[in-house]
Length: 210
Image 1 (cartoon, rainbow, N blue to C red):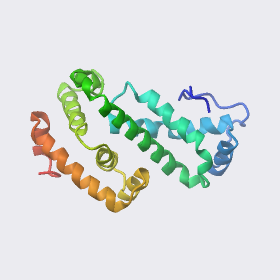
Image 2 (image 1 turned 60 degrees about the vertical axis):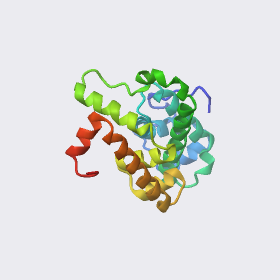
Image 3 (image 1 turned 135 degrees about the horizontal axis):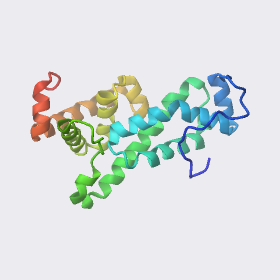
């Protein structure tokens, strides 16, 4: 797979009959054979999931396209590790988490650029209510204070709503480890929220962390 992979939706491949819907097993065999049509099928099926997860973890639209490409480049390069069709989604999720973790750590290595923080915050559509825009920005400021591994567990569980077992599999740790990371992340997140006027009011309106 080319290092310059572009994640775009392409027309149906001419080598597939119109209306053909290959089974997941056939797609996986095609991926093992480095079949371009099978690779496009995988992109069509999972690019949206990867984009959503990366944005919810990182909150930065500007790096999203490059990171999605990175995820699928890694997926295609290691596709022979996947032996069963039902393992595809967990595998893609775990690769996405790995790429997100790298992005978080890379950003932390460049904290000397912190005075550009306003440029590093999520870009939110201008049509969104100003109060909501302010809240989202404050939310990601709070997330940036968390340990990378705890931030991943927090985002996958609280924001994505994944089950504990799925979070553990994505992070390649035990459920017990995920629970500990979540406990520490939630405690740190709540403390950060209490120090932010926007998040403090939001916290007071809910009943999860009161």
